[in-house]
Image (cartoon, rainbow, N blue to C red; front, side):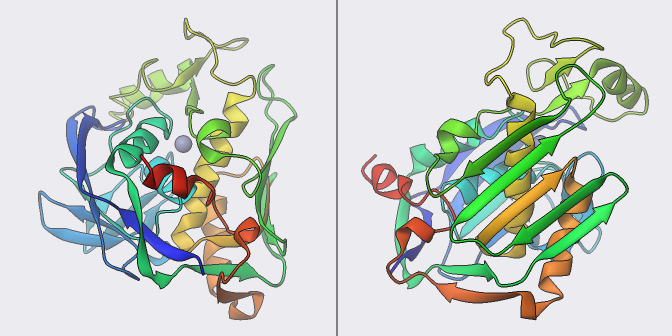
Length: 302
Ligand SMILES: [Zn+2]
């Protein structure tokens, strides 16, 4: 039986918020079986479960909220938790967004690995896709289909030399999240970042926490971390957004130009169609586990 997982101990870091540009404290705590991932705004004492029904905004990033209190940019941290197979954790943030760190999930992976991951008592629950569910919005579309393991395939296709017709497919039962996905940074066009900053948004955005693109190329001095880093970041985001279903998915995700808004509509549609999925525990089929489960013994061993 594959069991649920949480952190071994609490761990803390600080960083700046992408939108506010302000310093934010982040502490990850272990949490009880079946409690899921829950964000806590420590400055106002409000708890917000990381589930689809609490999503309040999907422009620029994914925001969850409750009673008018929100936490933005949850997707990279959620991606790291899902990628390392963490089912239960309590996430304290001192402000309205998760720190952006370097724009990827790698700093969160490092944090979780430093805390360690341990098995709990209850079996891990997964959501097995039984019937195709899809969403279309203009030229964006995404779907979830039945499959043996868990796969995310993504086609990025914008009118830019680095973003045209770029396709990557990651099979998480065979490819490691940490190595293949977690280090991919978010990306943005310089002219768009300047426009956002004039509106008082993305104040913390810089080449320290994003890939900056002009009309032709990457402007960061160090270049890219993966040849197709932008598509891999889309896969990283997608994993975080899908985790808002409340449990790991067993199925195949296909996305074309999709982003947080489309992904959120897909998860909402999935949850509203109970005939499209069933909840299972994984008795003895680790190759079908919905995340990089093979990683856990290494993590537990430090
Ligand atoms: Zn992102």
